[in-house]
Every structure is written in structure tokens, then in C-alpha cells.
Image 1 (tube, rainbow, N blue to C red):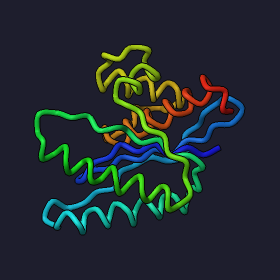
Image 2 (image 1 turned 90 degrees about the vertical axis):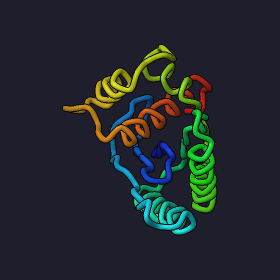
Image 3 (image 1 turned 180 degrees about the vertical axis):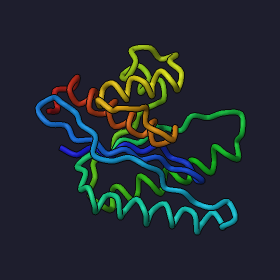
Image 4 (image 1 turned 30 degrees about the vertical axis):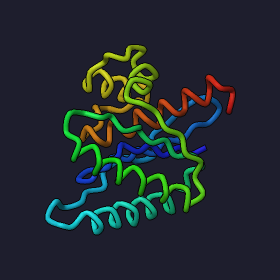
Length: 161
């Protein structure tokens, strides 16, 4: 089964595509959807939706895992990311993906076994779990892969495979 992990953002939305087969995972692709801050928010959200639709059409994931909103001190950023999350979830549903959502703490626990893990620890574990020669970059794409792996682990724990 193909799983698409998404790390939402308005400037940079990370995506990671993995395949789970008989309890094993392997990398298919990862990268970022980029939008320009010079464009209006409605145009940026449309670009995210359009590019995500293309990724879904290309890889045909059955399930999509999206990181839940981490509310920092900047409410304006949180609102923008919330808008991007809404568009991402809607785009996934329109393309017939089952949607799962995970907090950053859940992702870190699933990947590293420790909710206080830092970005480098998560990236290193993603590298090891997917048997990559180097750590995935940029951070947003690595986070998206971690979200996809978290979902795969969650499916195993819930006997969904």
C-alpha cells in the first residue's frame, strides 16, 4: 500500500511517499511544494491543491497522513498553516484518500521512541528506517516522510495491515 505523508505549510509543504508491503516500508519519493510569498493567499492555496492533486494522481496513495497544527506563539502563521491544512485535507478527500492526522509528539514517539526528539534525531531515524544513504532534506520533506512512517507504524499497532 502507498502512504503519502504531508507536512503542511503555506510557503513550503513537505511530502513523502512510502510503500508498505508485508510490514516493511520503502521510499518512493519525497520533496516540497513551494509557493511564493509575493502571491495572494488564495493563489498559494490553489497552487498547493493543484500540485498535491498531481502528486496523488502520480503515486495513487490509498492513505494520506497529515501533521496536525502545532500552535506556536504566532497566531497569524497558525491561521495560514490551518488554511493550508484544510486545503490539503480537502484535496486528499477529493482524490479518494483516507486521511489520518498526527501530532508532532505522536510522530516523534513513533519514529524515535521519544517525544522530545529534535529534528536531527528524527531525520537520522527516517534515514535508517528507509535505508537511505544520507539524511533526507529539506526538513519539510524529511518531516513528511516521518509522518508517513508514523502512519505505517500506527496501522501495524492497530492491526490494519
